Image (cartoon, rainbow, N blue to C red; front, side, top):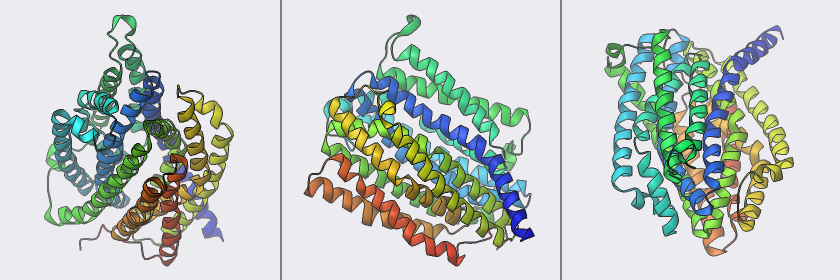
Length: 454
């Protein structure tokens, strides 16, 4: 009993240290998209739809693949940090930088030379494609900046320092608000650039965020401030181990991200009004989910630290507590947002039809929030953090490609239901995931120690 109480105290103390800065960071990060949608939304449904389909390519494809790189590496970094192995911690960062930088170069070239072709995969509305291409080509260099920012921010998280990334991204949001005010509407003598102005503001704010993150990382000689000779001091055994952790996660996140883009393409075929409705509720849903990203990610760091030291019972207890906490808080958060859904949607300038669709979508998202938060705690916070990468990948891809997408496609193309009905395919995907993974967690087969030399 005394041991359980000590574990409880250690769990909540550690989670609070990690979670609070992470919540603030994720809230700010989600607010960037919400700010763009609110400010660009005043330009009309076409502009809002253009930003949304561009975000699908940037946030739900590129960002998800980069997340796959840093998430796969985080599994190793958390365990190396648990045994105070900073040398291998830095080596893993170097592997991430090469992988993320190479991917960034490819995406930058694509967005410079073929933005309209990319966005034609997301919409068949010429006006939306034209506006989106202007947005995408303007901030194309962000694909080079974003991977470095994510890699350093996640390295700080793995070492338990969640405050520095929070300060950098908070500064970025304030700067973006000011630049949006200047560039979108042409205030204080600046030209009114409209949707291009929003893209330019995003690019400049992201560049400043990276500068601040690197400056304070090396200025204060944090554990993440690795010199170049350590970052790129490759060890064959470690590189292979990193590849076994990172590549399945990249495949997982890449194909999952492609799946979310297929969802968006299905929604886009319904109508431009449906795109506008999804654009309105997506950042609200991301804000709702912020607490649960933070809970799951913090749990993952703690599980990795303890598994790195060869412990098993504590990670299992932490996983169970996080799943229960996520479900309970998910129900409460969903209820609160549901009660205030009308004032929240009143912030947008939407057509009456788009507003009605958005209201229905937000109701569905609120009701399904407990299921989706439990799924994240199980998949990312537990299985992946415990090194059970391949099992996690199989479940994730099976549910989205064999359950969620087919159901959404049938509802949209065969039965021609509105967006509010088609969205249930996505919810079913998450429900099946929870049912399948519950047994795996109880079996404890997901626990793997990766810091050994084998």
